[in-house]
Image (cartoon, rainbow, N blue to C red; front, side, top):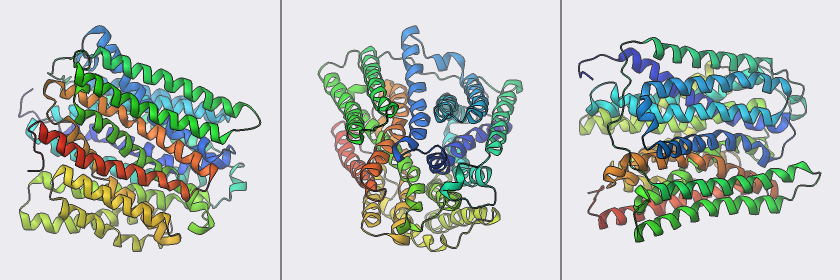
Length: 533
């Protein structure tokens, strides 16, 4: 590809794809409590929306890896990143189309299936779009384009809950008892529009003759033993969840058994990955990237990070409905879900500052100003949507902790990850031992501290992998599975105890991320890799 080729139009189209991911994922925070009331579900069942959505990411990435291993070539590289995005968009469009009869049927299971198909398309899009963004110009400026795309993705997360809340409730306020009578025709219209946008984006890619197919140049490295282990974990997970779902076929639900099965699923994933690494260290043949402890620890970190990021907001709607947290109705929670996801936008906009290499003084000023600009954007979007934002103004004080974390982290990945993990632990504990506004702000600030963790975890996990870098990246993407496992565990804890106390699971998630930050630095140093020097 010629370095002087202008692909601005393609980049603009690509950025919209990033927007879709954020829009749909964040809107689940409003859709989950709505479905709980509409379909008369318990908290665990409502979290199956995340299970279907993020589980699709794992299944999609795993299938690509298994098929590539079978044909002994990288399928996505063979297609080209452009075609990968097109196929992903078409698959998501099919999922959006399926959502229409799913809503008409009034079947929660049918709706889950349609969300799974939408997210399966997202998995393919995400696997293709990141390297495609780098290919649309000079490789040296690829991070600029990814940060731009990430910023737009975060904007989608901020407005998604608002749009979906309007589609569900309009300008009216509904009690839980009134929700069952809501006509879902507007939701059908929303998914018709979303599906149409998927098709439009796919068409733009198809008919843009000047766009490159863009293919990776890394050789495909087989890892048959790793594939077998991942396939084994997947099959056992399917068996576990068969017994989980079977509990809801009868009149009596054994909550203790469901919780035990969910914990078993968690231990299966953690134990399976650690066992794989130990076997790979003894004999690396056939294990591929899993022979590197930083990658396996990083896979667990991505699993934990996505899990805690998703579970905070997925259960936030139910928390807001409790009297200690305001007693809000389903139709009143959108501004808070929006601000939670907006918190991630605040952090990511600030994290993108260094990409443009400003001078030290300007950079320090921007670290203070940009988070509050992003905060203002979230407030403005909610204001023009006629949402009550009076309860969000004081949240601006929480942003000071984010700014302090940036200055303390000094752009060093392990140090940054440790401090934000530490702040995450403190905020979750404060939320657990208080209630009302202070507790709400504490839980919402989890979004601030999660906002910049992904690049730190990713860069530390693939450091020193050499020819296994591409494979290691694929393994890390699979661990988005955390968003499918951890929210249902918290949901079942809420069913067994209280929604407030269920947030203890977030403390343990942030603690592991702190551990990873310390451990991976030592592991990399033993390999001669010093990221924080």
